[in-house]
Image 1 (cartoon, one colour):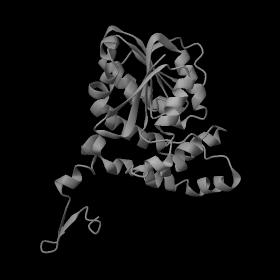
Image 2 (cartoon, one colour):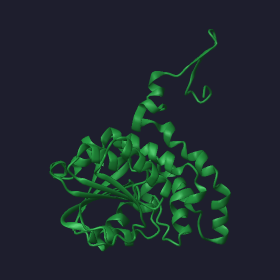
Image 3 (cartoon, helix red, strand yellow):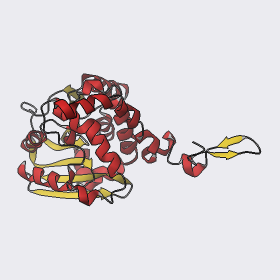
Image 4 (cartoon, one colour):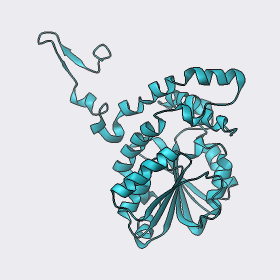
Length: 285
């Protein structure tokens, strides 16, 4: 850390110091600005390096079960962002959404993981009803435990394959936080989301900010990391399920095309200055 100029060394006093301006982006106190939390993906991906390499030779992919801490690390990163911005910055991206949530609507989160975003919304808007869907039993168990700990009776979670939402009814809002690009059948999932929206409902899709064209990503500062994570996780877990292997760098162009093909006629893309990682797609029928 010292030779990398992260930590400063005083040779006279033989002491080491982490400057405040470095700590601002390297400790959990930094919240969503904590780059060290993002780097937890490196050892996680290293655990499956040989498995992914084998897939280049024999095809297929590496299943979710091989990623021991993935949900834990992903949940920490998304929680930092959502704690800082979900209620104050992200929800207001959708016109009239705070008012509608206050009055009471049905909300579903597709690929909810450990469900922290659902629980934050449920606590802030007690009249609305929230449900989170994920195919990981472990993640859903964590989500349910948090909801119970917070005393929420308007947040529910189900282990479910989101390629089929039959029987769930329709929703005034459906969300997906960095989840669509991991899906085995993303087009099918988007179609199900469109079908299960109320006529005046909104789909809020948060996903990686990138272009579908690799040449257009040459000046994207975090593109090397994005493509590496995509290769080592996002694409391969989809391929392990005989999926499309869309990948994290599917990009805005393909995202807009797939949303249109799913039946969304009104889509706009928003950005938040403090969030360089994500784009926010606000879609209606």
